[in-house]
Image (spheres, rainbow, N blue to C red):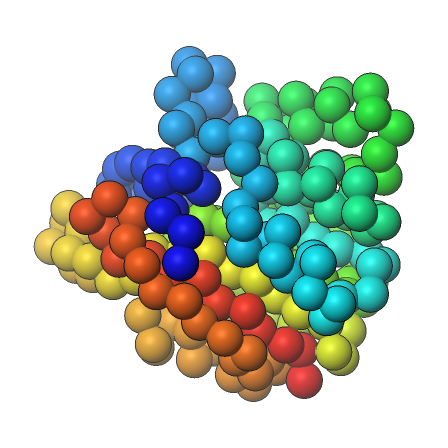
Length: 208
């Protein structure tokens, strides 16, 4: 698989609980200390988009940051809604999308309580967001993802795999975390690698 350092760098630089707070993420972007915001569209996303599996329609970019991947999808025929906790990168993403005339829209919100009433998306993307969602909100994240994707939709996920977190508990996403998608999604493929010293993986799921 692609070296994740070329995709997102230090996607989760701190294991502390403050990373669930919007202000923490917003301040990282405002200070320029957002090494995961590389300006590189991952080869795995290029691969899925060019694979012929997808039929352009509505797409979600969960934890979209500054919207690079949302704009990439919009350039390939998708109407995209990106959501993120941090206002600063969303403003940058919106400005860039408007300047390019792209159908990419951005919402300030929580991926575990997605602020969209009804929309049946054909594709969902999450690069480094799910592993930052607290464990008590991951089931809600999966339920929202299922609610807002149609049968046959695809979901591409990049995440850290389990490691020993700073608080002594497990960090990352393990089999138990992934099992919550099993009610509504089937796994198409998985690719495992490392982001620096941390194990990481790409997963492609298909909506049942």
